[in-house]
Image (cartoon, rainbow, N blue to C red; front, side):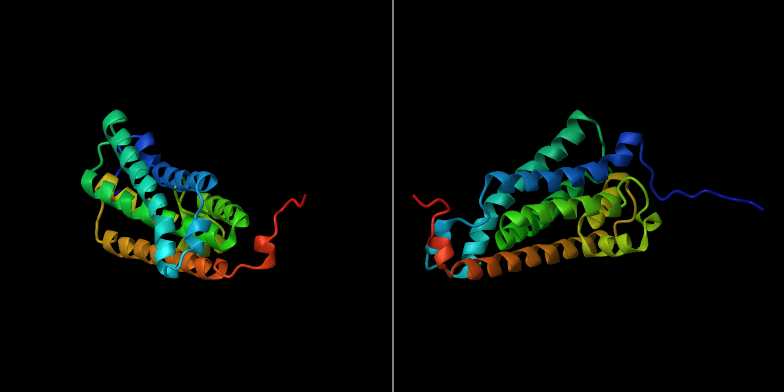
Length: 213
């Protein structure tokens, strides 16, 4: 019996092998930190007469701008300072921007819709994706419920796409993945728009101060 080992793509080092996972993780955590410092939707915007979708987009754009800068800096650091040398550096950068767009829309939409509890939801989604994205070990070896998590959350798709772009594997899956990220972006925008419509109707609880003197 003869056994042959054929590798379509291979990481040059241990660090390069983990790079797709940690780059994706850095994007998610970076945007998560933004919601600690920035409001997803401002009260001034909610009080305006602008359409809900315009207010939602206006709330998302600052998150998008910062996440684009973050993705660009990450790409520069790992390529120039750490010597990652991806097979497709420009495509890798563009893919990082697509991931930043999707992550920022989802996180901003969740926090806009749920408020402070939404931050906990974002953190829980991060923990679930740590074990289901296949970043450090094959996701196929995880329990069956985590297979569902892998299929419906975006981080696993980003990790896989980054691997193909960094190691020089087949790129046929990149376009469907980018379209999927666009879908996640639209989902985040829909959540944010719904949140605006929900919070435009003020109640007595909204007007009542938390501390009455």
